[in-house]
Figure (cartoon, rainbow, N blue to C red):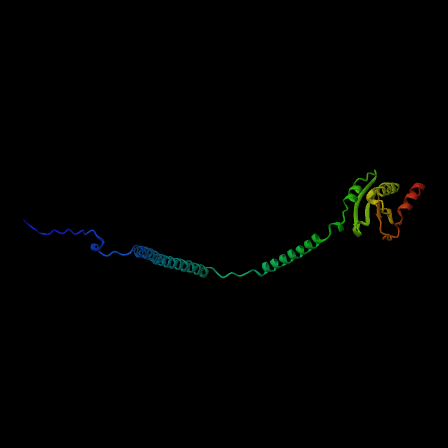
Length: 225
C-alpha cells in the first residue's frame, strides 16, 4: 500500500501570476504614447511644409529676378521718355481751366435755388406777340429781368404802340415801363427800325426821338406818330 501524499497547486491564483501594471498607470502610459505619436506626425508635417515653402519661395524669387532682368533689358533697348513741353503746357492749361470750371459749378450749385431768375415766361410771352407788320430782331434782359431791351422792324410806326400795349398787358410785363422808345427810318431801307428799353437813356443819334411808352401811345392815338 502506497502512502504518498499528493498535493495540487492552483497556478491560477493571483500569487502565482506575474506582476501587472495598475490600470490607471496603464491608461496614462497609453495616452502618453498616443500623444507622442501625434506630436511626431505633426513635427514631420511641419518639417515637410517648411521645406516645401522654402522651395516655393526660392522659385518665386527666381521668377521675380527673371522678370526684373527682362524689364531692365527692355528699358535699355528703348530710348528714355521725354515729355513734349508744348503738350505739358497744354495739359496744365486744360487742368487749370477744368479747376476753374469746377469752382464756378460748385459756386452755382451752392446758391439758393430761390435766388435764381427765370425768364421763361417773359420769353414765351414775347414770342406770343402777334402784331402784323412788326418783326422782332433782338431782345436782351438786364438786372435779373428788371430791365429789358427789344429791337425790331415795322412797316408802320403806329403798330409799335399796339405792340407795346399788348406786351405790357401780359403778366410777365405788367410791372414794366418802356422809358426809352426809338423809331427811325434807315436809309435805303423800306422799313422802320424801332428800339424799346425800360432803362432811361438817350438815343445815340441826334435824329432819333426818345419817347416814353405813354407818349408814343398818345401820339399814335392823335395820329402824330
